[in-house]
Image (tube, rainbow, N blue to C red; front, top):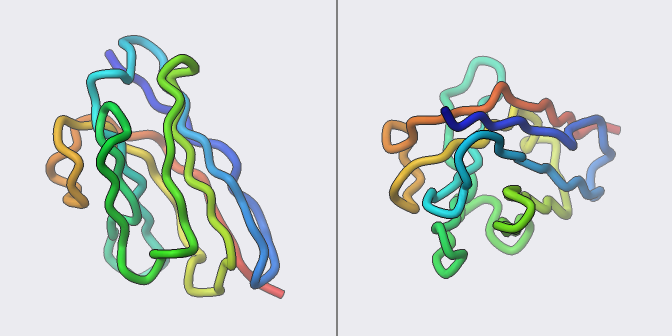
Amino acid sequence: QLQLVESGGGLVQPGGSLRLSCAASGPTLDYYAVAWFRQAPGKEREGVAVISCNGGVTDYLDSVKGRFTISRDNVKNTVYLQMNSLKPEDTAAYYCAAGWYPVLEANEFNYWGQGTHVTVSS
């Protein structure tokens, strides 16, 4: 059973940066697309970024394009989300998920982590 654990969240000032990590245990992540989703209080969950199993395909939510970068290290069985120029509206719980297709649709992902919280505030 694939298990995912997120880390790297925290409190950061607007304009700051954070790097989230999604570490997998159990089966290798090599065969899975991995995505980051987020959910802010009172809002629906939204897909933020996704990367294909070999890293050749990525996609991003429009509001994070140019600020966030998803990457993966299949040797370390870990996927990263580098978040720069953070804004208060990026405040949310961030979840990583693994599935078969590199799409930003939550119902395509079968394995989910427990989440890590990001707060952007001065």
